[in-house]
Amino acid sequence: MKIQETIPNDFSTRNLVRTRSIQPEEKRTRELSTSEKLMEELRNNYKNIQFDFVDFKNDSQLKEYAMSKPGMNHVAISKELLNKMAEDEKLYTEVKEILSSLSKYQENSMIEAYLSGKKLNGMGLVLDENGEVSKWTNMEEIPEDVQRELDAYLAENAETSLYGHSIV
Figure (tube, helix red, strand yellow):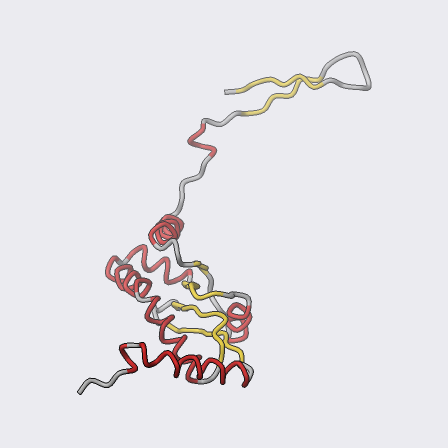
């Protein structure tokens, strides 16, 4: 379908006529690829997770990525893995199980930070093109005086905790 637009011409008394094509609505919106649909589905099903669909060429790119991501709910999935997941339902199911286990990775990271006397600033997972899972953490040293206060608080409150009592 074609429409005509009349555009005034400031340089003369006559008008210019320009035509342009109008595409039907379905042609204007391109269809999502299978991978894009999968990204959308993951984002909708795991709203608490911040997804990035990227490939890291080296460790310095991963380190830069991790340093820029405060918080605990980050998952980077390789674009190549995403394409494989679109073709392989079993692989897709395995990735969903990993995503459902994110809280276990978070808990492990918090314990790891505490035991090493550090504060956990960020944490996330990376799923590479083969579906291998790597965990990254961003930690900083806790000042000694704050660590002493934390240890004292935990010791004081251990008596009220189920874990603070021995069972005989």
